[in-house]
Structure formats: C-alpha cells, structure tokens
Amino acid sequence: MMSEERRNKIKNSLKLTKEKRKTQDVIILKLKIDNDKLNNNTIKALNTMFLETKWLYNYILDKEFNNDIFKFDYKTNYANVYVKDHYERRKINYLSAQMKQDLLKRTENNISGLHELKENGFKTGKLKFKKEINSIPLRQFGKGKTYNIINNFNYIKIQRIEQPLKVNGFYETFTDNENIKHKELKYDFNNLDFGNAMLIHKNNNYYINITAYTKKEERNNNRIIGIDSGIKTQLTLSNGLKLEYNIPKSKREIRLQRELSRKAKYAEGSKKKLSGEQSKNYNKNKNRLNREQQKRNNKKRDVKNKIVHYITSNYNIIITQNDNISGWQKLFGKKIENTGIGSIIEALKSKASNLIPVGRFIPTTKECNNCHNKYDIKLNERIYKCSNCGYIIDRDYNSSLNMIYYGMKTKKFKNTVPEDSREFTPGETLTDTFEGLNTPYVKASYVDEPGSFNALA
Ligand SMILES: [Zn+2]
Picture 1 (cartoon, helix red, strand yellow):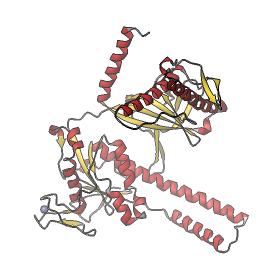
Picture 2: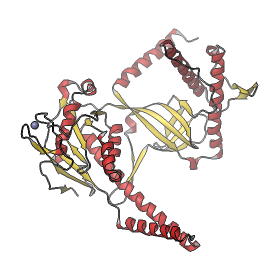
Picture 3: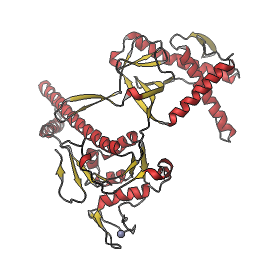
Picture 4: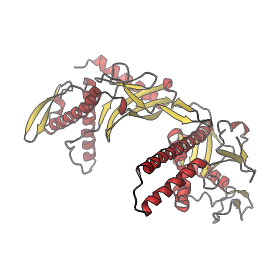
C-alpha cells in the first residue's frame, strides 16, 4: 500500500505541475522515425511491442468484462490471449513496467469515460477487443524513463529498445536565396518542458508525437494585427502593409515540362512504346523536372516561413477570416494553389499564440470601417469609396481593419485579452519592422502608396 506521505507528495507535485502549465503554451511535436536506419532487432522489437500492447489491452478488457480489472497487476509478464476457443498464455518481453502501467491507465480511462457518458444518458456500447493497436503511450520523459531525447535532438531512446531511433521533425530545413541549405531547430528546446509521448505505427511507418510546454511570452501589451487574404495583393495587414509574393517557374522547369508532355503525347498518339534509349531519356528528364519543382517548393517554404515569422514575432494577437480562402479558391481555381495563402494561414494557426477567427459570413469587404455602412463592392473595385461618409480607402486595408473591429467583439478575444493591454494603432509607422522579409520573392508596400510597390530586394 502507498503511504500517506508518498500520496501527499505525488498530490503536491501534480498541483505544482498544474500551476506551471497555466503559464505555458502547449506544442505537439510530430516526429517520424527514419525507417532506413532501423536494424533487424529494432524492427522486431517495435513490431513485437505493438503486438504485446494488443494482447495486453485485450487481456485487460477481458478482466474488465469479468469484473476484476482492479485486481489487474500491471507488472504482469504474460497475457492470456484468446485464440479460437481457448486461452493461450503469451510472454510479454518488450513492454516495460511503465509502459504496461500507462496502458492500463489508458484503458481504465476509456472505460470510466464510457461509464460517465452512460450515466449522462448517452447510448454507449462496450469497449471492443482489438485486432490491431497502433499507438503506445510513453508517458515519462527523461534518462532511464519510457522515452528520452538524445544526441542534439536527433535521436529518441525508448525503454527496452537498444538502438537509439533516428528521428526527423525537430529540425526545419530550408534553402535560402543562394540555394544554401540550412537546418534549424524548430523551437528553443532548452527552454521546453517535455510531457508525455505516443509511439505510433501507421502505414508501415513509425512516428513519435511528443507533447511539450513552452513558456508563454510575457508582454505587457498585446499587439494586435488583422489580416486580409485576397488574391490580387495576397496579404493585406491592418498595419498598412501589403505583401505580395510570387515564385515563378524557372525557364528550365518550363522547358522540361514542355518536353516531357510532348514526349508523353507522342508515345500516346502513335501507340508506340518508347524505345529503351527514349524511355531512359524520358526518366532522366522526369528526375530533372522533379528537382526543379523541389527547388521551387523550398523557395515557397522559405517565403512562407519569413512571412509567418514576421507576423508572429511582431504581433501576438492575430485576427483573420481564414474561411474566405475557400471562396477565392472556387473563383480562381488553380491560381491560388500556387500562391499558398492557405498554407500561411495554417502555419499562423499553429505558431500564433492567439489566432482569433472572424466568422466567414461577416461582410468585412462590404462594410465601411469608418461609419459601418455597407455597400456591394464589386470584385474589380480596388478602392472602397463610402457613399455614406465619403471615406476612401484601399479595399483590402478596409477589410483588414474590419477584421479587427469584428475580432475584438468575439468572445474569444474578450476572454483572452485583458482590456487594459489591448494595443492597436492603425497605420503605425513600420519602417523598422520590414526586417526579416528580405527575399526577392516578396514585394512589400504601404497601402497609402497605391501603385508604387517597393521591392525590398
Ligand atoms: Zn462610411
């Protein structure tokens, strides 16, 4: 039995953790284990771990059905496995005591969750025996614990698996303008707290998802920005900055694409197969084209990272109407895919500590930000001219200011931002904050300088 003293100690430490978490933001790190680096013993160990997890889970359920789950000893080194019409006793070799305990805990939580639903009047079935289980909880982080992170965030060590597992996902790689490859840690990991993790088996690949906690940025003021995502000027910010970006196909990419499609057509039209030499050339060109496309994707990612970094490092409250993208997508079809506004908004969602969405049906484009009168502005009208109060303003800038107007009315905004720390100045001077956006693929301009784009490169 657990002593009173020990029980109190655990209770206190849980309480402390809970207090600490209030001052932290949560991040989920998704890591992929490098299959190519796994040796045969490791592959066997991983596969057996998932098999044993399934045996144990079904064994625990079986106990539950016989009402003696609370007698279940997580230290057990075997599981009774039901095969056809009888039980077989199988040895558990790879799951550590901690893993077994975590699995028991997870199953108990599932069971009590179901009970709770039932008590609240929901129709619930029973938990079912599983043919396959593809996740294993790894709750304890640290040296000698269920999992650990080692070798400069390149490897994960899992209890009972000898080989450290090479993982991808802690680092971000990108290519800069000079085509030099960079590798950077995604977060300041030395200031992160690592929580529980999950080992996942999916489509013959293994993944580890780790929950981590980072210190909430302490700022006296909450700097607010509204973002309008349009097609023509791509992003218009409520600070008066318009960002336009374009990453054109290289001449080489266009040529390769043309050549390839011509060859493919020729082969199709003549119903002839390409000769050995021809198909060798065809594949060579295909690889070349892939490489060119990869280069362009890297540039896109670089631009995306820079824009997201610019926004999140200068503002901590971001208000946007991300749903209008799907509307644009319908209108302009493929064009928008190349620009990747969606991926910028997605990245903002995961990086911004506070992203306040404005409902999709709120007519941010149609409304005058000065008097809040509405009129049906046409798609080709770039300047909003209010017939009610005479206000004249760039169409997208007006919309971004309306984002703020409506965003500040949302419950989420009122709940997250204290009244005395809301900082918003429309059209503030930004000359010094262009920093970080220096790429030839982004053009930045102020909305009050219509038609004069200042390339920053
Ligand atoms: Zn007006």
